[in-house]
Image 1: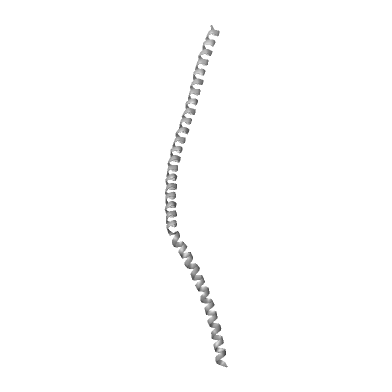
Image 2: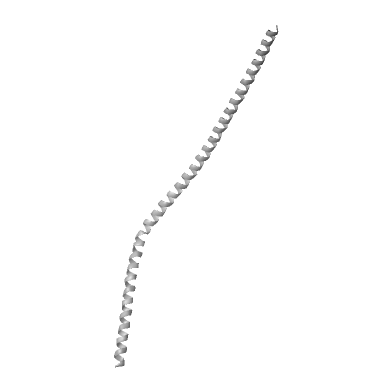
Length: 119
C-alpha cells in the first residue's frame, strides 16, 4: 500500500509539474508574441512617419523644380538684354582704349608745342 501511495504522490507531483511547465511555456510564448506585436506596431509607426517625411520632401522638390523652371524662363527672357549689355561693355572698353590713346597723343602734342614755343 505504501508503494501505491508513493505512485499516486509521484503522479500528482508529475501532473502539477507538467501543468506548471505548460503554464510557464505559455506565459513565455505570450510574452514573445506581445514583444513581436509591439515591434510590428513600432515598425508601422516608423513607416508612417517615413512616408509623411517623403511626402514633404516630394513637395519641397516639386516647389524647387517649379522655381527653377520660372528662373530659367526669366533668364531666357533676359538673354537678349544680357547680350546687348555684353556688346555695350565691349564698345565701352574700345572707347576707353581710344580715349587713353587720344590722351597720350594730346600729351605728346602738348610737349611738342611747348618745345616749339621755347624756340
